[in-house]
Image (cartoon, rainbow, N blue to C red; front, top):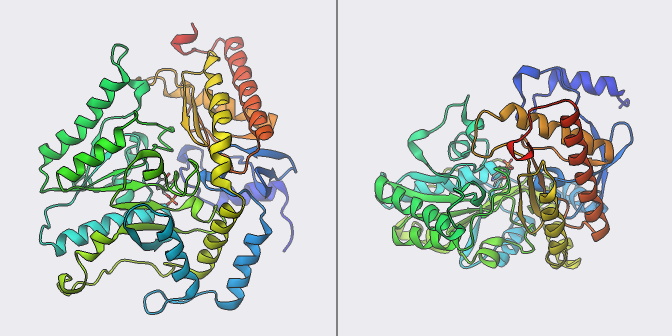
Length: 466
Ligand SMILES: Cc1ncc(COP(=O)(O)O)c(C=O)c1O
């Protein structure tokens, strides 16, 4: 195959590749950086420039890029047996992966429903819950409670329970199935409110919603332990546990969406129990499950949920949900190798060791005048340069800030991909101390340069800078 020139990549991309979250006004006119190679925590663009990958792909490249072992495991599986139909058969590689995952989940979460990614994991989890309630003879119990700023995916159902306002603007959604609680970001609380009081209020939101909607109508609460693409929102301490208790007391299931927090991001296979002291009814995962080497996801269901509607309780039902590629052998081979590498290299332990440095460097950016908030946990972080987190009229300014920081950081050797004016970080988990310092040095310089630009150009600055 002939090598494409930079111009060809750009024009073919613009003409034929409709990207996720494409701003349609600019469609066909963008000049995206083309990533052509990657190794460790670095990606290399079409001009041969090496950049640190701050977001770790899309929160997914846990073990780093360019692992030949991963390529070998996948190619060996593809040569031996690239596919089997999960509708009628099974295979040792997929059965083994299901077992390895069940061994690492908390409580009795032992049933792995394999999917093709995170959206389909969330979608399948909700469909399973609806299916279960139908079998249990309570077809009214269908509403899923979610939260503002949550992101759970891009299928019709997973998007319907996603609460990022701007993403919902132009799309239809299953409004009758979803209910949203207010933002749980402590930064947005009134100045005279303590974090503890804020936590009480946000927990009360859940209970009020369940009682107002009627527990007989509410099927589940879905929550990312930390809201990732909503801007690394870390709810106040104890929030998750208290929400689980409320769910239990109203017979509402708890889906912990660990698509981002699973597979080591917070230093554990899963964060629900290890970090947040909850054993949910369902965990959804994807991304880090294969470190992004190949698409795969899963909804992991508790024994209780499955057993209650199995065997003599099944009422003849068939769980008619699943995918051609459920438990795909090449994906399973990649996931097994990924687990092996994480274990062998002590990557979870490494994350726990390097977290204090990562979080300290992140917080230090809060000293810069353009920065409104810094927050994070484990190897997840966000530098929020929103002009005013509660205002809607500062959006153009926010986009300008994010775009500028991104451009400066790329010049300096760091890929950011800002979410409006928020720079989110989830680097490959194998990042070293030196690389971590280098990443934050670049970001600090990128923010300083952006501030200088804005002052020089007389731009409208966030209130706190005037
Ligand atoms: C928490 C969470 N859930 C679900 C998804 C959807 O995953 P996917 O893009 O693999 O469909 C994402 C994607 O970013 C996510 O962050």
